[in-house]
Image 1 (tube, rainbow, N blue to C red):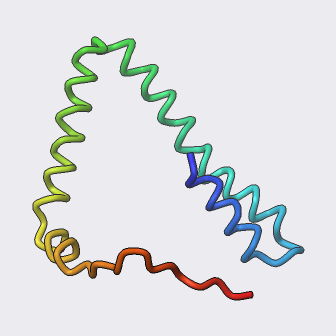
Image 2: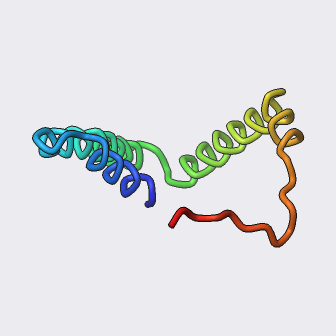
Amino acid sequence: MWLPVAVMTAAQRYSPLALQGRVNAAVLMAITGPQTISIAAGAVLISLVDYRVLLIVMAVLTGGCALALLTRPSARRTIAARPVRAAGRTSRLPR
């Protein structure tokens, strides 16, 4: 739920004032277009295939994606190379 808020904030912040309406329309279309298509595809699938089969397929695909992400070499290197910050250390904010 936070991603559309961040995208809309960035679109408003980094687009020129004269183009904000057009940028807003383009961003909303990019966000809601795929969502509408996925709802339609889900309605078609649920009418053709039993929901239990769809749940099993989703679980297998999600597990396969997680396994692929966790077993790639760059993921292990990134996690292992992450520095540990000292406890109690806070960042200073500009005044």
